[in-house]
Image (cartoon, rainbow, N blue to C red; front, side):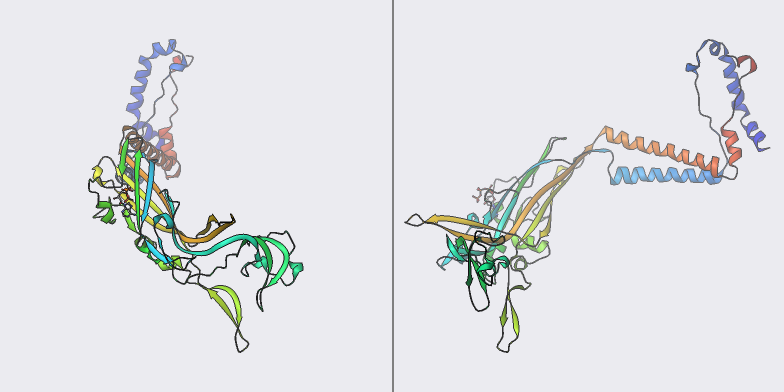
Length: 424
Ligand SMILES: Nc1ncnc2c1ncn2[C@@H]1O[C@H](COP(=O)(O)OP(=O)(O)OP(=O)(O)O)[C@@H](O)[C@H]1O
């Protein structure tokens, strides 16, 4: 019953198809099957549930395409997210500290506290140091802080063996330092580093130093160039300005203290380890034992990330750099030495273990501009989704609906050609 009603509704379509078939009969006789043309059959149903679901899918696809693809993700624009960039840095400031050799005041300027001094995108600002001046190659006891340099007798110090975590080669002797400590004698740069430190950052003034980060980005796809410095003829602008995202976005000069604050720490925290670090055990008058502690400057690594987001369909003035600061590491130090010779041509060196803050500067960017291809792709995707919506509704109609068999018979009709054409 259902089937016949369906065929009744489709009769007009079938009749016209039959007429067309008769009209083409002459051609069908002479044309090979390769030239057959198959067309889809459309069945209009009055199924409200599937109809409503279909419209809902259309609405969803419309909202997704307009709202998300075009407005939020700007799917009509071409993107260049791989700009070329160059970074030049410069630190400025002056600090006074005790000279570690003559114990007089010593002035530190950029050439002393910035390593390396070339102004690259990675720079190290010295905030504290352990100095071991006047070292000469000879024999001396290993530091008691070096665990594998400690000994009880000569047998513990195998001659010619290196103190792996220490400062030289063992000579074979065990030297008594005091009532509680003995260490192996070594051949190396003597005296060895003893690790004595000031409880305040030696370069305390470093927090007021200023960091100048000059950089430029070039988006090759759009041949678009941008720099983070104001184009000014004033010779004093950068000397006096400080970065502010609203008022002075093109003044890339930052106070070190402000950067450290932005990463959620204080300058002192990064220059001195507030935690206690055991360097030994001290016996009290009453027979008890107290641990001896040292405050250790730790330094750190601060990542400075500069981000450009430029929409070239809008005013270029809106394309500004954004700076992000993050503390990557809470410990950073390295050793360096300066060498010199006395009148007798004996070689000496001043060893410095430098603690400080390393700044790792990186630049990323993304520029966008209207493009025909991404626009076509976005609309093509929307059309594909519309097709998928129809396919999904077909599946529901033909497999899940309670009248699925009826719709199936209506959609897939086996058409037999008239008897006189069957042999064609
Ligand atoms: N860390 C900084 N803090 C403040 N101003 C800075 C800093 N670094 C550079 N400047 C200033 O920015 C401007 C551009 O610096 P640039 O290095 O290109 O020129 P310069 O004349 O060689 O700088 P200078 O001789 O003053 O070091 C200069 O006016 C410079 O004084």
